[in-house]
Every structure is written in C-alpha cells, then in structure tokens.
Image (cartoon, rainbow, N blue to C red; front, side, top):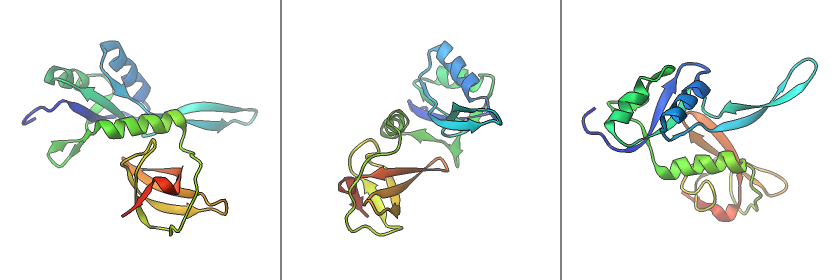
Length: 168
C-alpha cells in the first residue's frame, strides 16, 4: 500500500461468510455496512422471509488507520480487499449513505413521469439515491419510471419521481 487514505473500503469474503465477518467486525468495534434485502423463501410446507446480503460476499468497512486495515485483513472469512488495478477500491460516504437509505426505506418510491424514453441516461438529483447515475428501464401505465442503477455488478431497480431526475 503506497499511501493509506482513511475511507470506506470494500472487502471480499468467502462464500456465505458475510454475517460471520460482520459479527467479528462488530466485536472489534470496526464500522461496517452489510446491506441486506428481504427475500421470501419457499419450502414445500411453508414460506419464510429471510435477510440476504444485497451484495453477496461483499462488506463495506470504514478503515481509519493502517492498523485497522491489517486487523480487518486478518479476520477469518475475509479473502481480500477489492482492488481496481493497483488501487484499493474506496467508496464515498455519499454512496454508503445512499445504500443505507435504499436498504432502510426499500427501493419503491412513488413517481410521476414526464417525457422520458427507455434507455435514457439520468442522474438522480434528490432523494435517497441522490447523485447516482442510472438509466430509464420502464415507464408503466401509471406514469411510474423504473430506473436501473448499477452498484458492484448488481442492478438495483427503483421507482423514482421524474422531478428527481436530471437527463444526461
């Protein structure tokens, strides 16, 4: 590591080890974000709502000093810090807050649609997804716009008010 920068980093965990790693981070007092979505699981005799990681095998960790960086790296279940080229992947505080809002409030927001066309590139101007870039995926008969937003190779579909969109 050339020069350490305090920021939110992304760690990649072993398969299905996200909760175990999150518990260890919590015990150490390290700030982390493990966003989850509610999923209905169907068994032959019943249905159950369970929480599943929104980004399987990824956890966002706030690393404030180099000692915490190495301590997190040595936690059982952590494979590696995610890198883009030679640089460790960092996530802005704004994106972390947006992910928190998405998972807390759900991704369905009511909307009114104007003259938007499918595939049109947009930037969300306000609301819980403020600052994220996406594209128009669907405009329903109820004049609802569904926007596709890509985060960590996962696609999040959200209904967004057209007043909150900036065409790019």
